[in-house]
Each structure stands twice: as C-alpha cells, then as structure tokens.
Image (cartoon, rainbow over all chains, first blue to last red; front, side, top):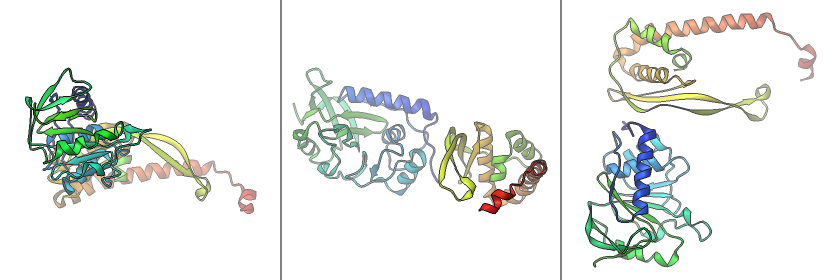
Length: 189
Length: 136
C-alpha cells in the first residue's frame, strides 16, 4: 500500500523549494520543511519532502531506503532508479557510499553534480563543526549527531576538483541543513 | 473502467445515490490535471504521428487498503475522484456485484445506446469511395 504525499502538492513543493534555497544560501543554517501527510517507513520527513519537491521523471535517483520507499517515490514523482554513478539525487539513510563514486558533473557542466540527501540523527546550530565559505559571514557552527565516520574528510577530498563536486543536504526529522560544495568544514574550532 | 471514465460526474452520483454508500476513502495522489499526447495512424497502419494534446485528470485513492485509479478526459476533478473510488470499491467482493448491477451495467447500456444512435446517424451520410477502395 502506497502512502500519500503532500497534502497540497503545489504549495507544499514550493514551500519546500524555498526552504531548501534558504538552506543552500546560508550553509549551516537549519530550516524546517513542510512534512508530507504520509511517507514510507525509514524515510525521515525532510528527506521525503525534498524528494517530492525536487524529483521527477528527469532526475535519476539512487536510494537505500528499501522497496516501500522505491514504490512510493516512483508513484509520486516518477523518478527512475539509477546506479550510484548516474544518479542526480542520492538518498542515504544507512551506510554512506564512497563520495568519489557519485557523479560530480563536468568542468563544462558542473551543475550536473549529484545532490546527496543524507540522514543524520540530529542537527543543532552554535556548536560543533566550523563552516566557512560563500554564504557565511566569518564562520558558522553546525553540530551534526550521527554523521558517518570519515564524512568530513571524504567531503574535503572532493574540494580540489571544484567546480565539479557534490552538494549535500543533511536531514534530521523535518529539519535540514545544507553543505554546498563550496563550504569548508573544520571539525573543531 | 472505461465505462466510469466515459460517464459524467452527475451520472455517477445518480447511479450511486440509490445504493449502499461507499466506504470512506483517502486521496493518495491528485486529483490532478495534465496533458496527454494523443497519437494517430493514417488508415490504421501508417506511421504514428502526434494528433493533439488533450486534457486529462487522474486520481488515485485508497479505501480499506485497496488502491483505486482513474484517468478521465477533461478537468472534472470530482469525476476522477469518484471513478477512482468506485474502482477501489469494485475490488471489494462485498461491493462488486451491487456496483456492477447498479452502476456499471446501466451506464454501459446507456453509453452503448448513445454510440449506436450516433453510428446510425453517421451511417446515413456515408459516402463510399469505390475507386479509392479498388486502388488499395
């Protein structure tokens, strides 16, 4: 049985997109997303909302949340399942795959780089990682509980290939924080 | 399904009105309106070509764990939703026979009668192109 999606697909998708735009513009800032009325078990509400808002039949998607999630995504968005290398959106709820395996775009078309939606346990501002880069005045602090081991190092390893790269959205419950490819992370200040 | 899609909203409501009410349902997707490209073939065997786009409205509902789908021509959201609900109820043995007798069969008969009437009117004005037929 497939769960419903957004209560009001038009308005909720737009609210979700606007929230993501804010999160991407101010890396490390935590924003809340409207939650869908239903979603498969295993998907945090924020990740489900982002998939509904962003994906359609032109965005190949890789996910590890299981068959229920695959059926729900196909029903509501029509996004085709793809290999890790070909996917435009990568949803990770369990073990983090090697970031180097994801599509990073090309130097001519860096916008083709994948967007990684990563489930974490909790997000809070004002402590933890020190973020610097475009969109951040001086420095921002973001505390991430439940980030995969070696995540910061794996992400930093992609910095030399800029403008290619991947953009990351951390999802915890109905809240997200974005880490665009331009943001630099230091694990402690 | 085709019968439900061809009927109009009021006909569906009227057909349902004198039977047991349908169980409640929840919307899973839609009703939402979009465009569908209709394709045609000359003479039934030519190359397929895009004839026109048409407006369709689709809806999926769930009723007691069963999913009902409907896609109807036009932009009548209530029609699509009602057709999807009937589709879901038809999967339930308790409703299937009643719905078939009260809704599907009368509507099918009415649609068949209308089609036959139109066909009769058209037949009266048919022109036979004997020469064209002989050349094939």
